[in-house]
Amino acid sequence: MDIKHCVKESFSVIGKEGSTNDGEGFIPKLWENANAHYHEIEAFVKKDANGIPIGFWGAMSDFSRQFCVWEDFSKGLYLAGAEVYDGTEPPAEWKKWIIPASEFLYVKVENSYNEIFSAMTAYLKTNNIELAGAVQDFISPQEHGQSYLYFPIKRL
Image (cartoon, rainbow, N blue to C red; front, top):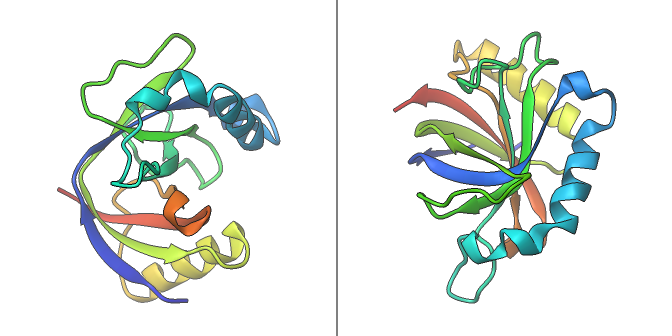
């Protein structure tokens, strides 16, 4: 597991929102909905010089919407969406979250999310590093959909 470090300023994500209260399988359903209606937000999505979106986020927050860790790592909110320009207002049926500026440790998801999450939480515990918020899932279009998990270790 190759752990990398970065600092990311706050950023905006517009997506389809759901929660663990929606039942098992709610995350794939959110992504299916977001992908089916992507054309509704495409004009607002940040893109690189080649016109490729800079990133899709499975953003997570606790129920207070303060971007704290999910309760028991199993209960919270999820937003399946794309990074957009700040100041963009979401269309009807979409939600906008502003992810707080943070220092992150991040890792490529090469096997399963659960394996990476377990390995990283063990690493953090072993190194006396506390999570400063909910873990964020980043999907890189430039890397053909490669996923990364971002573990916030300090709010800025």
